Image (cartoon, rainbow, N blue to C red; front, top):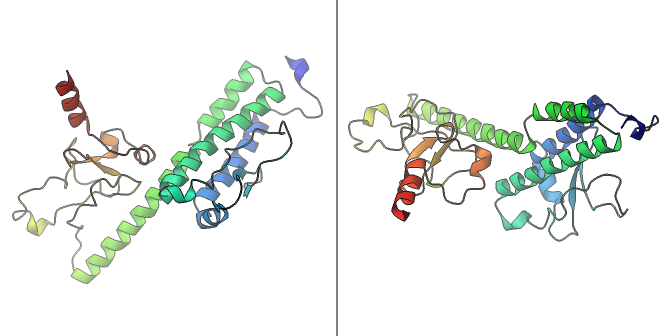
Length: 256
């Protein structure tokens, strides 16, 4: 196996991982801090475009190379065509998923090219697996932005009302993108509000985790902490209709 390695181009798992981290950083920039620039460059009127992460932590949107076979695995073609056919956040998540797949294919292409043995491949994968995926990072970034907006909104309301309270209205039903911070019923109106459902998690009954991700069941309209029902913002982005564990179990019993 060692004979496959070329002395002139030999790389270690650490060097391939450094290349992986640089490309990953570039892709994350495109999908977070540089998202508006990236969005504008993905014009659906143009030909098939690809998002490339570069080893120097930069990124570019470009046509695929004409060389066949290419020097490196190619990213997904035509990411620009889907841009206007779905919500922006869902589109970004979709590009992030394909970016993760491309990063792995490039890393293990290098592993094969440089003749990595079983231990080298295991080491490379372990280093990669210790990092969050591009999708996870993009979803967390979106969540933080929404949390910050919610905090600013609560702060503005507190100043205008002269007291520090959380909004009493729930986010819109079905709002599953990385966003919905938990509401809390105004303490002064607890006795007047007969229905407190939605102010507390339907799984754990807690209502204090205001900065965590929440999700609403489209069947029973009960709100849950994402962590209580094992739903992350990234997973929620691909759910058209969410059914909580209780409603899913009821449906299964009826079918039986």
